Length: 171
Image (tube, rainbow, N blue to C red; front, side):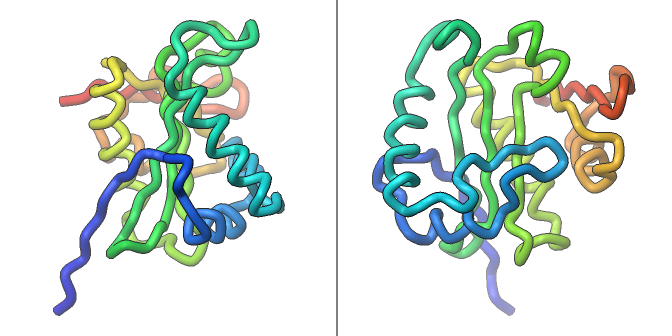
């Protein structure tokens, strides 16, 4: 029986074709999760990596509205299968639409419990970034993500409009 290994790696400027290919498989906007690299060129991807590293190293609000955000890749046996973003803190706008964590699993790897693995690992990393409570805003028709958040200790604070507001406090 093959051992399955999962690893979370922080985005770097040296990430390559395997990550780029995964990002091309994930839709540009699916259930509110935005993949800004969908349908972009490899050179645009490389520029985005540089910008993303700089963004993760910022403090405070950037450009009047953005907060620092760190991106991580989930690998399964050295193959990228998903990714997530952690916002270091929330503004009032992000409390309404966004939250601290967003994540996606590439379509070819779905249905195997990777969302739960990824969310747990992101929560662990978020704690190291100084986040002690996480808000996920999940579209009400995204039942798999609601189940993942609840399985990771999430508590539904409210349902408003077309979203669930789920808070997770690390153990």
